[in-house]
Image (cartoon, rainbow, N blue to C red):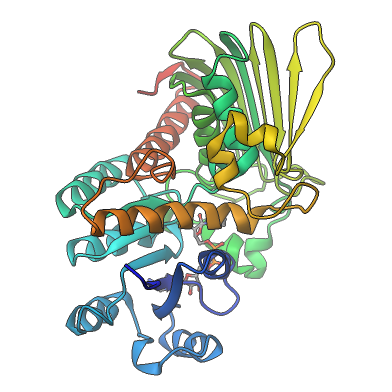
Length: 387
Ligand code: NAD
C-alpha cells in the first residue's frame, strides 16, 4: 500500500496525558496520519481538540459510537484503518470491542480491561475479527530492552536465577485527587481504574517487562498492597515476591508514593554467568555484568548492538550519542503495528521483527496479574497461582 495508514483516536482531549504522546509517536516514522477522533468525554472539548489538531470537522465526533457509525459509512479509501484507545481504563473494553466488531484494527492503552473475564472475552473478539490488536506496553519497545531480551535468549547470562524489577514514582504521595487533578482522580477511583491502583497503572508494566526480557513466565506470586493516603480506595504501593517457570525467583516493587522518584522503572536480571541492568530514565544504555570480568556499558546506536539484536537496530533512528527515549519507544510499537497491518493487507503474515509488539495475550496476562496480586494481598500475602 503506497499510502499512510489513517488513524482515529478515542480519548486524548484537552489536558490529557497519553493521547498526545500517541499522536506524536504515531507520526514519527511517516507511516500514519491522524484523520479522526472522539477526543473527550465532553463533546465540546472533543470538537475543540479537533480544531487544535486542524482536523476536518466532519471527522471529529461527540463519542465513539457516533465515530464508528460515521466512519463505517465512509468509502473504504477515506475510512480510518485503526483506532487508538487512550481513555481511562473503564472505557478500554467497550470501545476496543465495538471497533473490532465493526472491522477496525485497534491500538489500546493498558491495562487492557477492568477484569480478567473482560480480557479473555476481548481475546476471543480479536481472534474472531481477524484484525490487528496492539497493547501499548511501551517499555518492551526500547532498543536496549530488546537487546536485553536478545542477550538472555542467546544464553549470554546463562541460567536465569533472579529477577528484580521496580517501578517507583512519587507523584501520588499527596491526595491530589481531592484537588481534582485529572490524572489522579480517575486512577484512584475503582469504578474507572479497576481493582488495582498502582498495581494496575504501573505494576503491570513491570510484570510485562520482566516476562519480556527473560522470556520466562511468572507462575506464583505473594503480594502485599498498601494505600498510604487515608481514604484512598486503591493501592498506591505494592510489593510482590515472584516465582518463575524455570525455578528463578524475583521481586517486583511498584509505588506511587516514593517521593523523589519520577518514572523509576528499572530491571536487574541475574543469570549463572552474567547479569544485566536497564533503567528507563537512562534508556540508551544497558549495563552488562559478566562474572569475574569488568562491567560493560552497551550504548544504543552502535553496530555491536545490532549484531546481537536486529530488533534493537530496527527500533533505532539516530546514531549513538543522540538520545532516543519515551516517544521513540511508542513509535517503535506503532511502526511494527503499522507494518503488521500492511503486511496482512497484502496477504502476508508479518515476520518476527514486525510482530514484536505487545498484543492481546499480554493484556490478558496483565489483567491476570492484577487479579492475582489483589487476591494474594487480600488473603494476607498467601502464595497465589498466576498462570
Ligand atoms: P487522562 O486523564 O490524562 O486523559 C484521558 C482522556 O480520555 C481525557 O481527555 C478524557 O476526556 C478522555 N475520555 C474519557 N472517557 C472518554 C470517552 N468515553 N470517550 C472519549 N474520550 C474519553 O488519562 P491518561 O493519563 O492519558 O491515561 C489514559 C490511559 O492511558 C489510561 O488507561 C492509562 O493507564 C494509560 N497510560 C499509559 C501510559 C503508558 O506508558 N503506556 C502512560 C500513561 C497513561
